[in-house]
Length: 126
Image (cartoon, rainbow, N blue to C red; front, top):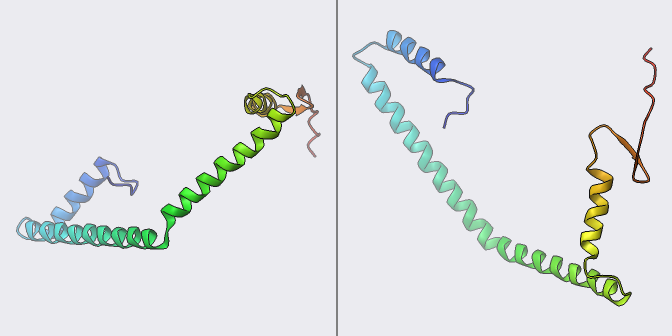
């Protein structure tokens, strides 16, 4: 809830200091005003989010997302057709995935050339 870098002990210390500074008679009034302020901030936040949602709906963001997903599926289909015509297996994408993992999922810091790990000498520090 609170992402100000304050732990519960920090908030307790701040509360005790506020209690000593404000006093026991005025503390309920201050807390009530703070609660009303937070409620107003939350309602303004909800109203703003509602306006953003309406603006996105009016701008057609959902239809744009659907169009991009359709385009992606069309591209995937167009890529798989030439692979089938050349006699390759339908699992071309899985073959590409295996190749990608072989090249890029090796141990961090290793240098790979032509799919094989290669040791690189460290340059002497000046």
